[in-house]
Amino acid sequence: MFDNFVIPDFLPAAPEIFLAAMAMAILMIDLFIKDSRRTVTFVLAQATLVACAAIQVFTSTGEITYTFSNMFVDDMMADLLKLFVYMTMVIVLFYSRAYLFERPNMNKGEYYVLALFATLGMLVMISANNFVTVYVGLELLSLSLYAMVAMNRDSLASTEAAMKYFVLGALASGMLLYGMSMIYGATGTLEITELAEALYNGENNRTVLVFGLVFLVSGLAFKLGVVPFHMWIPDVYHGAPTPVTLLIGSAPKLAAFALVMRLLVSGLITLAQDWQQMLIILSVLSMAVGNLAAIAQTNLKRMLAYSAISHMGFMLLGIVTGVVSGDARYALNAYSSAMFYVIAYVLMTTCGFGVILMMSKAGFEADNLDDYKGLNKRSPWFAGVMLIVMFSMAGVPPFIGFFAKFSVLQAVVASGQIWLAIVAVVFSLIGAFYYLRVVKLMYFDAPQDDSVIVAPNHIRILLSANGLAVAALGLAPQVIMSLCAYALLRSL
Image (cartoon, rainbow, N blue to C red; front, top):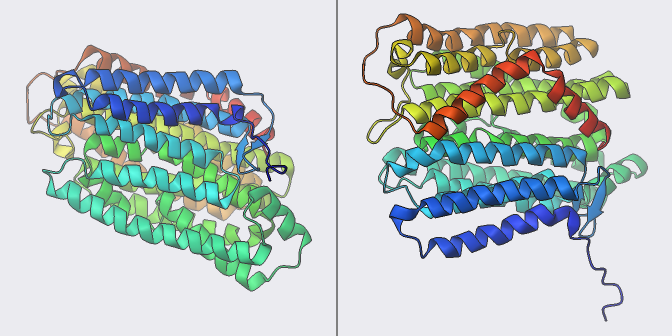
């Protein structure tokens, strides 16, 4: 009866298994912890993430390994992205701690448990090699985020944002599932690696494939938050508690990038001519709408929301030009530039929202642009950190954001799409306006509040290190760029 049963290799998925076990254990432990001692849950969550990173390093073989009937893949790209996910989530939880502690209605263990389950969803997405695995990881991440957005039950804005996110997220999941089902119907396989072979060797119904591809790309576009599937981003960023906004705007972008690479580049590369045109349209529209709409915002979280839309549009240029180039060397350069871009963006976003969280206090959300007037007079050091973030996001050298944009533009030019590079540069120049406006408010306007900014020492140290990393990695960008190129070379 069990002759055909093969015991799977659990080692490639050891970090995920450990994380799932610890998340459930912490959920039970937290039931017996008083609100005043919520630090125990925080420490356990952080220890879990650090332990997962250690397991990831020690179990990595550097080779492409499949397990669970080829539904799960472990390779260098997955290892690198997962390590950045762990690092990002550790930073997110540290930044969130003081904010949650000052708000008793939100200082609950559910935040940390849901953050761990969201992390698990990201890890599964990154290593997914099957449509079913993709969907399981995606929904685990999404359901955790829906609940986190609605955590502040006393806030009407948070409840409204959660409802919008849930309804639109369910619609996007349905579109993604419908696209997957049509591609499965045309090819007869759910496995991503087999999908590439089936499309290359088989005679498939092209109409059904392209129809399914449209729905698949639409679902991915929603998760990336690119135009015209961006309508949830500003409302969710604005309405969600700031720690949740930080989480949504950072680590999930790494998982979404991996998902695009797995599905489009690894699985549907035969249909590249079709999805390439879609991504070009999504990219240009995202850069246009994101940068132009951000100019009109007076709320910093909404401004960063539209900024995120434009950045994801810029990142897609690397994916597009990797297909256009046709040469394996140029393709690797383009994909690694896109990967470098999304890592740089996550690093900048965590620092930017870290400043917002540091300035926020009980009963006051430092999320309006006017709240940053005269910040240089109140705290020159942290005004400098925010200046680094804004300059980096605007693409001003020598910060990491400049080299991220430069590497993508270099790949676009190498592919021969000069017009696309010109469009990207023009919208980047437009985007520089609203980033520099924040700098102007901090350094040239009189402060509305002269009170001293008080923050825990560990937050000050971490925020300083985060800001200096944005600057230092701009001086030595080849460190991460080489890692990205090597990881993709060993994975694709």
